[in-house]
Image (cartoon, rainbow, N blue to C red):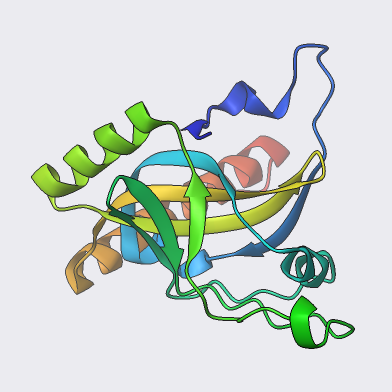
Amino acid sequence: MARMVTSSDRKNLNGRDQARKLIASNRRARRDYDIIETYETGIVLSGSEVKSLREGHAQVADSYARVMNGQVWLDGVHIPPYQNAHGIGAHDPDRERKLLMHRREIDKLSHTIAIEHLALILLSMYFKDGRVKVELGLGRGRKKGDKRQAMAERDSKREMARAMVHKAKGRD
């Protein structure tokens, strides 16, 4: 059940902030890709995986999602086995995990990926109202020059903001 993430998604109908506890984030993804759209999806996990995630154990670097046979699968996420799960309760730490999205969204996503040659990257994993959610980003890979340009733009914006603060405080 994916949906587009907007700035007002943090508030529910009653106006309260929804609890959102970050498990892991892929910080390199925003540097290596131009993120065009983001999606919030559910994920199919076993009980020992959820317990391991509650302890904060997950590695999401180099993880990505792909559409196969009308379903979205997450690959490259390492969730280590839960310490107290043995035998039947243990899970494979590097298995592919199914993501939960509506059929219309999957079809639209697969069409967009195929036409525009985009990548579907995991941006973050978090708990939202007691359930594990995954934030996916639809992005285009950056080349080395693009990365440098983006870093230069970010640095110049930071310098302008500092200059504005100094000028407002009267420190010329």
